[in-house]
Length: 638
Image (cartoon, rainbow, N blue to C red):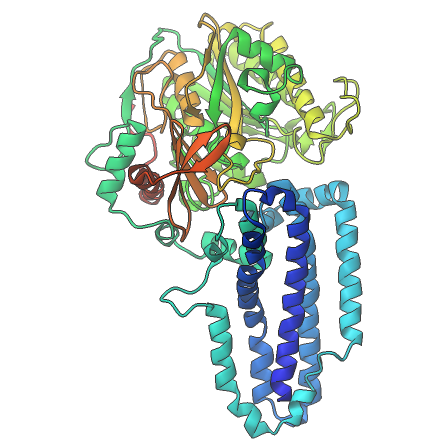
């Protein structure tokens, strides 16, 4: 039947497009599939076709309805409309498939929520794409032009043929075809329709990513983040009674909670003083452990960090909350772990009254500021910091005659000079202060000023390692300036990464790529290399311990000087969580079976189930959502 024939040809064209995209990814990353058999890897094309069919079935709904209900008198108009309807879908999906490759190279996953989230910042994204992805854009637009041109000139799909079928027969086909499309969209006869987790058929994470459909992946992530309530989001990981969740979370984190389910406790300082110290937290954009010697990385790339690590407190076994800056900012500014979905920096209910170091220390007379070299509206940082106790946000517009300006803002050198001036002003006024600084030079397209560092030989000037080298130069410059000022000896300084430079790996959670460096500099405190497993909330709790004040707070970590410190880390990789306790890692994700691994030689080795650790992982993220929803993660009485 001609009606079925035209619809089937449409299905084949789109299926072929997705197949080609999957073949390209399979070829590029074939060397990372060595731990599975060749036959197992080929299943990606079968399971992938299932997700492709879901997308194509959605696309075919409008053609199916119009062809079956439209009278022949308007057949030419309908046929032409559907031609352009499919043309728009085709070139759009050609673009998505092209964009998949550079996105995969950068983030080691198919496009997800991040793919659309950054569209909120067109200026920065457009500038980045034009500077760093010119060739990729040229290839994508060339392919869109060629494929679109060929499609419009071809009569391979001609819906006019479908109108040769009598109206009564076409109309009678409407219900059966819609049922068929419904089956295609659902792609399952079980109680639950197919979803993105159906791509997770292998222990190899890369083949699972190849199996996914990029458009489906983006749509599913957007829907989950924007449309699903937090309760619905958490149900994808599993269901747990709140009483049990708080009990298990309390046990694994070794933090008590009260009858109102509040993790709020009094913490005595191990360095009590009548003159509390200032606190400066200097977050480093994407400075992974592989770049710093004391955390197991290169010997000479970051001499200033290496020196600070030798002379002060160095965290050698520290792991980040997640893979995004807002996760690191929240971890170091509020001491919270990574909440499912959007981070608290961007969530509506945490825009005011949420716990931060600023509103914690404000009753003790501390002035507070957030200092950033770019536009602080990015990732909603300005709104979140000002709404949660910070007195001032310093951003790009506040820098007069900067030394160097890149796509993302002023240089790290400008940042540290500005911060030092601000600290001198606080000191001159006799004010205690707490400040969060956030660098941005180590960010693609890695634009760096001349004459500041010796660029690495045999490597492009605009490269990650040169950016790290420059970031380290700025760290050295900061402490060079600070040591000349009165405030230096009365300040606790933290230098810590927000996350690693690029989190990638074949494991379902690439644990080694969460490894980051941190140092705490505080006059009179004994130097040591702290080797126990730690989190960003642990670093924050340690820094607050060192300022010398007894405090009450809900921070989900412990000072390294406390006997309550635990060797636990919660890592969020996209929408999958890994809860690590010692060298055992429980992994949970939306609609996936929990798994337990042993972390050996920077690889995850699947072992028998640790059901308690798996339940504790679910408990923590259940508690995180509940605390956010009820607004209990905040400062109470002094």
